[in-house]
Length: 112
Image (cartoon, rainbow, N blue to C red; front, side):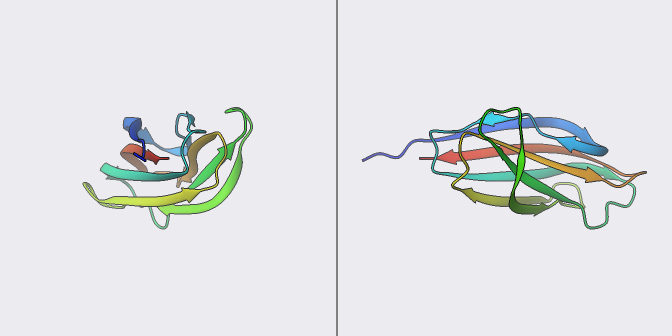
């Protein structure tokens, strides 16, 4: 049996400051997912900023899945988080400290 896979760019050149959420992505067909967060630029003191993986049955109502991804603090650095048993929809959410920002690309790699 051939496994299906797909990689989606869910955020491209997006500047996160304050509260952020990625675009929701429907992935009900997939059995596993990996979020990759690549920092392009950062400004201010990011500190220990983490993005939470969130899951949803409908793409509108969200809860934290439990996986945390520590955001990369330097340009061109990358971080990731693996997710299993997530239902239909996925996204990342978090908060960047006041006076700080980070420009990112977020990939979502899915596999059945």
